[in-house]
Image 1: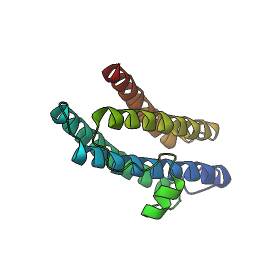
Image 2: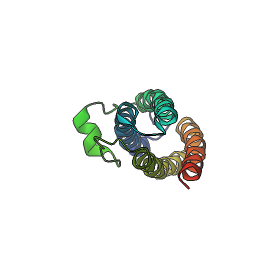
Image 3: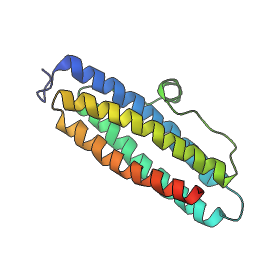
Length: 154
């Protein structure tokens, strides 16, 4: 057992999943910053603000995920190399079209939701309520974002 009463072996699997999630969040964060900076067209004003809202939320969640990894006695990944290697989301560059940017964010949220559900299951299996609660909160938020982006793009 680790210092917070969770089985060490299973906790290491959760930490691995959280580090992969952290990498995905970090790549999505940078992609969204790029969309914010480079967006052009008629929807510039609304999308510029929306992308800023998204990356501000992501940066808070990145910190929370890293802190959860530390709580579980792991070490959070933090280099660009690690992020690109472990992320389930691919880096996007030079995107100026709002529709392409939104489609990428929508696809990225779907990817992240799958990662979060996997971590939620692992956490539930060992009664890791802290990780389970965090994943549940993120899932609820991102499911709503997916619905809104789908509606916007329809």
